[in-house]
Each structure stands twice: as C-alpha cells, then as structure tokens.
Length: 216
Image (cartoon, rainbow, N blue to C red; front, top):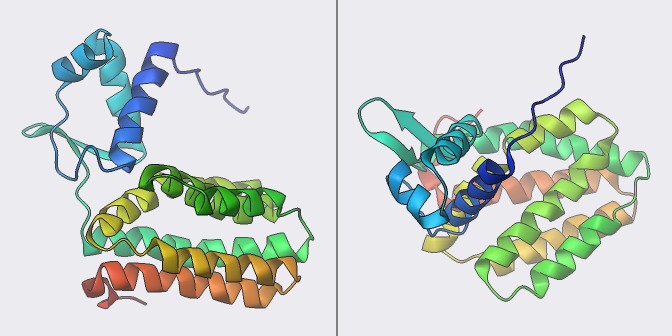
C-alpha cells in the first residue's frame, strides 16, 4: 500500500524555501553555521518550523546535522562533487536519450534556456539552468529515473554555486546547453546524450580538478 507524503506546514515550507534559496545563491556559504534561534528571529517564526526545515534540508544533502557542531551548510569538496556528478553521469544522459527517442516535447527546455540567457543575476541564471536540465530528463518516460535525478538536483546546484563563485564559467555552459538542445531537437538521441555527458564531466573537472582521481 503506497503511503501518502505528509504535507509540510506552510511556515516550515516558507523557512525551507528561504534557507534553500540563500544556500543555492551563495548567501549562506559552505560550512556556515545555521543557528535555530537566529533563523527563527530572521523569519519571524518559532524554532519549530526552523528545526523541521533544517531536518528536510539535511535529508536532501544541503546541510549537515552534527551532535557537536550543530547544523552547518554542507561543505563542497572534490569528493562530494565527484559523488554527485558520478550519479548524474550515470543517469542523466540515459534519461535524455530516452526523452529524445520518445519524441517528447522540449519546449520547457527551450524556455529555460531563454530565461538563463536573459537572467539579471547569478541566482536567476542558476535556477534557469537547473530547470533546463530537469526539462531534458523529466519526460524520459520513467518516473523513477526522474525522481532519482531530482534527488541530486540540490546537491548539484550547491556544487555549481561554489564553482561559479571561483570561476564564473556560465557563458561556456550556456553554449554547451544550446548545442545539447540543438541535437535533441534534431532527434539525435545519441549525439545529445554524448554532448550532455561531456558537459557534465567537463564542468566538475574544471571546477574540481582533483575530482578526476578515482573516477571510474
């Protein structure tokens, strides 16, 4: 019997969305402490929704809860980047290959690419880029595959945020996105999947050169 997820209370969702946005835009940096009382005061809520929001964020891998250090934004290093991007390399190109083969609409990917090009700041561009990738894999025809990739979306975005702060290479990634979409729209499933694989691999290798060591 399938269980129905319990809806998150509105105050908890508000705090969750706000903290996640600050993490994924670099306003809260890797390793930074997240103090319940301070966050509760900032958002005008009690500690309970803050505590629940932090538990949810820990479940998605954006924060770490420690008995000794309390709650901190997850540190991004080469090992973490390799783990997250290995999952993407294994699953995302295959999902795109299936999306193209079944002739699924790529209008959402085209729209996301346009939003990224027109973005006024890094936060808006990062959000559009995430939606671009999701629009490529979500119509693959396998809901479980889509959910598995959704599970690592936030962690991948955290890696990107840290990498962009050191090397804002978004223009190169934008060019690669356009090429991936062009191949997909032409119905070239293998070409699009190959271009996506190269795009994902090259990003983490540029941002974290030491992550090459140990790659399968």
